[in-house]
Length: 593
Image: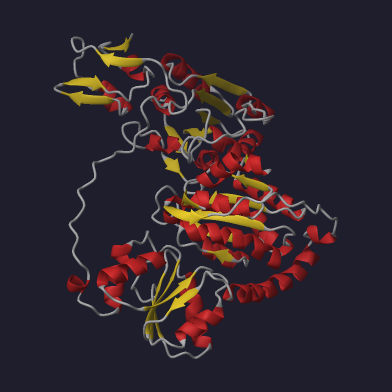
């Protein structure tokens, strides 16, 4: 039955058809829709799903199910794999019983990430097989195949997708979702306990599994060649379709080898292809994972073929590819006159400027404004974290001085406190991120009595990635909400203050109280995200009272506030947060009844 599916939905569908029992994830774009889809369709099929507190926990939950012989999946973005790395590296030595698939969505560009890291390199580092789909249809097929491969090799298998594959849509021929097979159950065995002596023996086994994986992948249907002469292209992932489209645009035919299993490289089909080539261009986004292995294979086999790609500058190691970039690289490789080779298309119209701003009514705007006002006249450094609130670094708020990775606001602040003891340190962290990575550095601050203000921006959702749940919320079934204040108190924090950031007078008083605390203090600014709970009120500008001082625009940067004809107007995106009314010196902003 053909169904139009987004790439992430196709992965979820493939996992359901493969018979998974357990799926766990932490939300992160571009991977979030995998778990969203599994949560929607999984319960009917008997699949347990959860948003875990972080990616490491998600992998460990999936691994536990696989130890018992169940098929399981853990999904995350490429940054999440860093968090899960400790568990994943050891899992490679221990192995699994049931099929375990780790879906990792890379973000070339990057569009919504701190890095452009390439998961294929991590797979090589961990000595785990990786599959690299080029489209949603292939993502669906590869996911099903990955579970079989995992059980054959007794290893976790990584399905590495990218933003374009994750979020593209394609018609996919799906099958019926079968009943869940029975779970064999956990069998006690010393193999599950990774003592150093076992690790030494298992490393030998793991290295042997590399060659077994290479043999399995050589017969994979995801590697295919089309011969059109002695000049060819080897491509992997979505780059394969960039190549085919670029060749159509150039009006050319070249030999093509599509690599869907980049590590370990399936040597037989590659060797067969290279034996018939004089020159080859390797096209792959990010790092030269395929290219390095092809060069090594050609050298070992003494093949007289010229190999080009990233190492000789035909293609970059940074940024996302597209048809234009690949067509230009092909024109250079083929020594074509580029102006004649690539048809000229009219340039697209310029996009309107979109400064980075919080949504209208975002409670984070009030939190940052209150802290900035309360800290006036003091030497304060604001350390930030990952989430919607990273936008607090942008004008006009300018209320975030650092941003590194999830949970790092607390650690960076403690480091700064050691070398700038006279400076007040304020660390911002979101509610979901607090549970994900904020607890260890908070405990560290309490233990060492660091005079730190931790501001938890609790908007009652994981907003940046699509409004997923987290441990601070009571979800479906028997999920229990874990109260942030209680957790902070349990960690030993004595000063804990809770306030509504949109009640500006109260918020500023709470901020002043937190800044005056001597030891570590936790200030919880709690108000629901307006995209989840929209207010029933709106505000308007009384034109007779407005002096057009634009204080509201200049200090808040709310997209609902617009200068017009010498005055300020409030557009329909207003959610009635009332912050602008609170700071208007002319009292010209009033509630619409």
